[in-house]
Image (cartoon, rainbow, N blue to C red):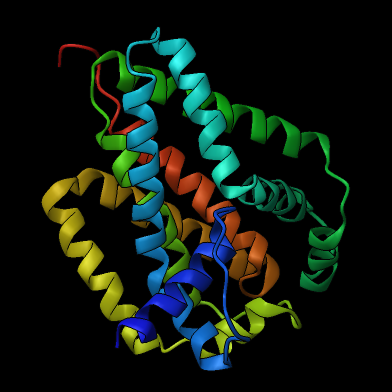
Length: 247
């Protein structure tokens, strides 16, 4: 039973992070399908690493510590979610063409000027929120943001069809047990209601907006959509949990 859970968790870590996760044998399609159920746990692993790093840099000036933490956070994901946000910005901002044309834009390795602006603004927002959290000695945002953001990807996988054929993501979404996925979402939602209802609401609204835009402009979800959702939900949670020092 433990191995039945650990293998999907290892696959999920390998998909969403740069952490070394050796897999002793070729995973089955069913194991790939179970991996998204572990996405909230992946977020929890990232949260633990960020909290540990936050403790290490806590004595530094907040602005310096925030820069180090944001760099570490970005390295943990290999910046692939930022890449997804950039691609989605280019594709969703395309005012002309059908969903196939926009999917072609997603596959284009070049990045437009608007995408660069969005990435800079998002990173600035994260940096400011992390600095504010460190200044008031509150690391809770670093705990909740990664968990809710990875849960958002599971929610999109359970509700949107996958529209970029080929590759591992298609195998994952095809074999994802959506009923169990909704059960995982319910558990995270209950915990979120207890710990930070405003952050949970914000994460849910952003996830719904991303899903709605993907459905209308692309016909469904892609790997880039999942990455964009992660980045936008992380920023939203950080913003909603930011309070002035002393409050």
